[in-house]
Length: 482
Image (cartoon, rainbow, N blue to C red; front, top):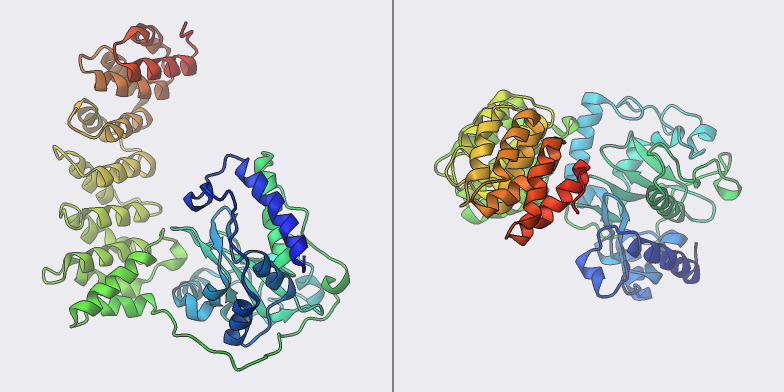
């Protein structure tokens, strides 16, 4: 796909199928019904090429001339960038390179975390097969020199890269699909191949194919992309203009203790944007001391301390649990601390996390966001039966947000199904309609058919919401609502 006509037809088909699929539609698309954007101008592309110092590969160039970006090209990719946003990875995301380097050193990658040569321990013929086995191997020096052309969705790591160090005879650069959860990277011989693979993955998902199903567009290929055909580095067309690199996590953490209030606040804002789910490969023990010091400081601003809390959730070791648990009662920090503890709880099963959240939920009126985080952690990470009496009090507390009461009821049904069945069935006859509403909604999670007759009685309830949920639960439990 090196012409605008080819891209237009391909993207039109993808767009129509995506909009008809039931997948979430970005707000910005609901009016236009188009996942793309206006085309980039020739001048915009030439400006990008001068800035990079390289002529863009043909398929990517034609893509930008068709649409200057594309929304949701993959499940965890937010959008392909507009031409003016395209940037070298080392400039745009030094944090990723830092974390990736630490992860490679600690846990190894597709090639065991060591420099195994240009082809990652493979022969050239093996490396350029682009099949399901060899695509996980990659040249680590090329990763550092790659071009970032897509942004991950918030809280994830999947991005698309172009590799100017590996160019086919037709001028196409290798295109890489990178994410923390991919072993290595998935390499493709061109941007067009990458996009076809993403489209086919979308189709497979829509068709209900198993996760092990592979897109058709994997190698080995023939022609200029055949394993035995030469590759070369892209030729420079100008010196290029290297833009200022984003500060690293370490630099931003250091700035949280800067003597200038503005520098501290700016660093906190930047770190809020860097907050992401914790992965073992990202843990940075050397940040524990400064982040803990900042979090526990009584002199630092609340947003600075909150930023430190969130970074402990993204990069902290198990030793972060204590300081975070101690900070949870602080109303100025509670939201950030709760999010950090949630990320830690994914692989740190420290009972102090559960203890802190249980104590927080005992408040007469906990913050909605924090309480929701607490319920989720206690339910999913710890399956803590100590939650049951607290959840019951939340269900009965008519002053709480209704959605929070629902969350408490569903959590109860998960951690203690037998007790939940008894208690929720009893509340189907509660005097308060909102309590009946919660019970009628959550009782289906217990699977207890003793609820059928009490639910059938609620089909005549004076509250329409209660009647609706009673009917739904009856259907799920196998009772006839008529």
